[in-house]
Length: 290
Image (cartoon, rainbow, N blue to C red; front, side, top):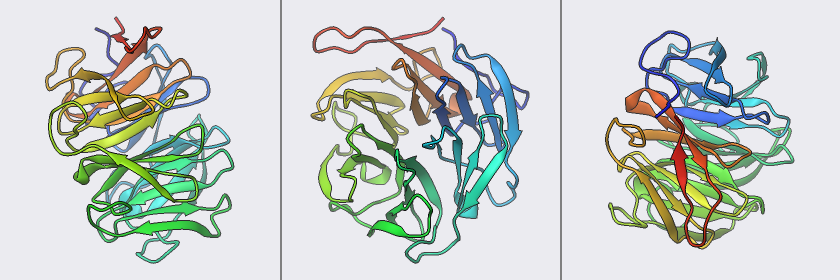
């Protein structure tokens, strides 16, 4: 099976890839523990890379595409968020460290709405979700609190917006996904700790496609669970291992314009691409590319 990358520091190789995103042309961007952002075409061919400006305090984790097509990279240990052109030119940085409203404390993920507003998850000093205005001058929503009740978090990791503007939060150490509307109102949650269908072990990322189907990356179970818009499991992909189609602590997901799924397979030091076939009734199938 074809995978993208292998273990190493050379161009096209990875050391624990932690985040992945896809641009409007279906190019793929990956950040890893070297502090590099590497760019590949949709066939997995290496194109270019750039280095994050600072890595002494820690490495980047969390990527997204903004409303203008730029690459967004989160730096948890610097409590800031960066916007780069697809060629790696730094356009802007924002965020100041702290636990107060409008500050950032170890941000983990970001999701950018079509109007440019930004949802950010945080953990450690404060367990929180904030929504920043497009100009970042105001916080429109703050949901904070450590715990396991609705609207509480325990290391919220990945974020994803659906076409209706609802926000999906991979609440990793609560082993669940919480769903909010665009105004921060709690809608529902699903998942519980375990290995059975519909259960999760440390969901580190979630992505939602145009049909409302959810793709949940489970760090602990080393698999990807696919659910429909009603939170019913359609498919479980992978399991622990190093063979093609298996994963070792996957961290992040990305969907391209064709519905293909990219998985940052961290401890296998690679990215795997799963190709979406035309769905048949009650089933959604993927092939790994050779």
